[in-house]
Length: 430
Image (cartoon, rainbow, N blue to C red; front, side):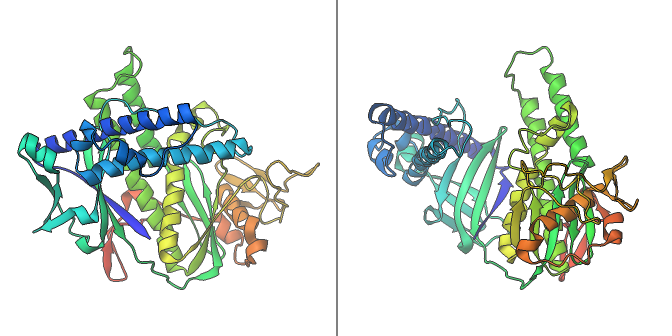
C-alpha cells in the first residue's frame, strides 16, 4: 500500500524558476504526445502502445528539454488517459454509462506536473537532488535543483516524487511505501455513516456509540469563498482569472483538504478505540449531480468534498485492516429504525409502503410510539440495517438512547491530546 504527503514548496527564486520551466515543458510535451496519439486513433482507429510515444518523440525538442525519466512519465500519462477512455467507451457500449465519453483533450497553455522515480533521486544532507539532464546543462549550465527532505519521512521508503503546480503554487508530493497495520478488530462491530450537510457525517455503531461531525464551519468557509469569487467576477468577462482568485481558491482548497483528513482520522480513531472492524458508508452514485435539496442546498452540498472524505476513510480502513462497505442509502431517512420498518431498495418501493414515523422540525424523527430521536442518527442506523442480514450483524445495542443524544464533534477546534503515547491534533473536542 502506498501513501503520499504533499509539501508546499517555498524555495529561492532560482529554484522556482526551474520548476516553472520544467512544468511548462512537461505541458508542451503532453500536448505533443496527445496530438500523435489522437492522429493514430483518428486515422487507424487503433490505440497508442505503451512505449510507442517514447520512441516516436525521442527527438522532440520538448522531450530533450526534460530529464529522460520525466519525459517518459509525462508521455505515459497520455497513454493512461487513452486507456481510461477506451475502458469508459467499452462500458458505454455495454450500456453501463449514460453518456458517451469524450476523447482526451489538449491541455491549455500553462503548467503540468512532472514525476521523478526513486532511482533518479539522490539524498545529499537533508535535501533531495533532482538532476535535469544533459540538454538543460548544455543550454543553461544547470544540472540539478534541490528540495528539502521532509523530516517525518525516510528516504528509503520513497517511491517517487511528483511536482504539482496548482493555483500558482508548487507542491512536492512524496509517494512512499506504507505497511498495513492490522489491528485485529472485531468485524461484527459496525459503524454506519450517513453523510449530510450541516451534519457532515452522522455515525452510529452497534456497540452503543453515536456521534456527529459538524459541517457548519465547512459550509461557512465554502459560502464565504463563493461570495468573494462572485464579488471579484462581478461585471468581468467570462473565464476571468487573477492572482487574487488563485490565492483565495488555494486557501479554500487547503481548508477542505485539512477538513477531509481530520474528519477521516476522527472516524477511524473512533473505530480503533471501540474495536469496530466494519464501516458501512451510505452513498448514492448520483449524489453529486442529481440531488434535489433546493438551489442553495444543492450548491453547498455539491461543493463540499464528501466524496473525497469517503475515499480517504476507505484508504485509512485499508491501512488498519477495517472492512469498508459502501451501500446505497435510499429510504434510510424515511424508514423508522426503532419500529423496524422495511427499507426498500431504490426504484423498488412496494405499493402502499408507508413509514411508521415522520421527520419533524429541528432535525428530529418521531417514531410510531411518539418517541423523538435524532433524524440523522435514524438514517445512520438504517444504513447499518441495510447490510445487517448479509453481514450477520447484531443491532440490539442500537437503542433509543444511542439515537437520541449523539455526541457532537467539531473537527476545526481539535485539541492536542495523547493517543497511544503520541501527541496528535486529530482528536476532536465535544
